[in-house]
Image 1: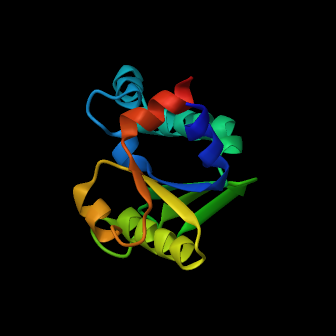
Image 2: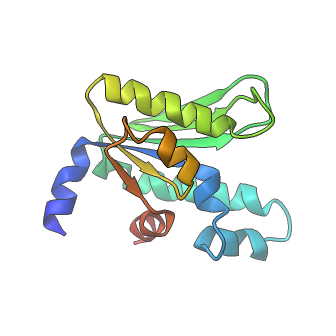
Image 3: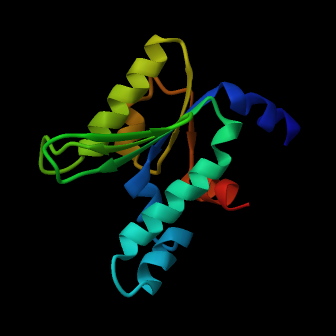
Length: 144
């Protein structure tokens, strides 16, 4: 575990937020299902806050959501950035933003880990991403 923690300060985490939060059986899905109104918003806010509390372990954290807006929204707090990817096409807008973010970090010789279970997305960044983290493992890390 100590070796794992020693590597983290050089790692840039990029998170496919909807993939993590909407994962069947996840902690976040339980929040969504137990909240009478705005369950996804509640789960997303809690997810972002948990990431913020663990952000000091990493070089950077980028959390990317799909958005219905025509313009992207970007919120930065220290080494953590939350991106609401603009709607360019019917779906997978966050995937496009994730691919671009990882490519940019890779070009700068930065170490990049992607948090997702999306096989198509992982295949799209196979040459530019250093590691993949399954959503359950990342959730367990930020909940501790």
